[in-house]
Image 1: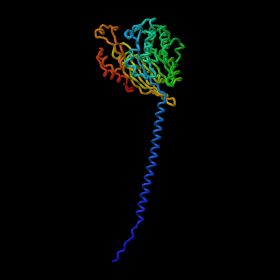
Image 2 (image 1 turned 180 degrees about the vertical axis):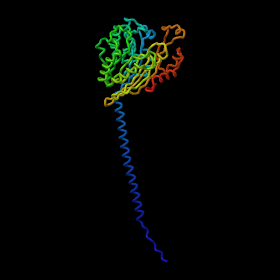
Image 3 (image 1 turned 30 degrees about the vertical axis):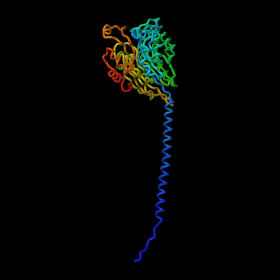
Length: 402
């Protein structure tokens, strides 16, 4: 049988090689193009992120700090006395570094600072040395000053005028609440910080001294005055800050009067309401406005500098928030936080039992987190943890307690 040998087909290996080369090229081309696309996408994303970060850095921002009542009680005056005058700035030496970067520092000076000519007295008829105001400015950094409170005219109209002159000479950003004339009362205070224009108006619940002219202090029960000033403030500024000295003394509960006034101010366009007067802390709330904005209400910041007698009156703090102006002019208030403080003085049990108020010494403000030792020396039988929880519970969920 003859065996016929078949010729080997050399075409198939060549075809397979060609196909493998073609597939390999296709994969290489695809990966190359995908890599370029990915790089471009990443570059574009990185560029956009960089632009957004740069734009964010360029947005005007104001860091604001607000503190409660500054009361020049007899003990505070006595502890501030030096061989050459008074040093009120020292009271803030333990807390000043915690808000050293603030652009605006709101303070309520409760009572006049008209000086020795009117007599230096504490409660119930307040008048402090002129160094009280300069100490608040240099020590605490106060530059947005409220004078609308029930004690500012305790020593009469001349003391009110001297107090206004005192603060005016210190060249604060803005002063509001007390006035030398009726024309002054109809003027809104304005200031510009970081290209953001702020309007500042202040009102009190009542005036202890009924003999002073009605224009001496802005009273919020004069609704015509409130509407006129806040409307002008809204029309001529980016941000409207309103100071309200209101509420029930020593009560953590926000009154119906406070709620009503807060809603009125919000309807008129107030961005931030800073409350003082109750001498204790109260909650923080956000009110939605019909114009799409929001009103942040700090109902009461309590006391900062005082020598009152109960622990709730000695727990205050540093309210913080940022004001940001977007490229379209829209204002936002954010980053609400609160740093609790404790106002301490040494007072023995026997001195307290004898109600020897001027025996109190070593008066000083502490950050609450650093106040374990002074609290242990007090007669309140409390601690840092309990007082911090009190602050958290009182202020509510709108604010971060540091």
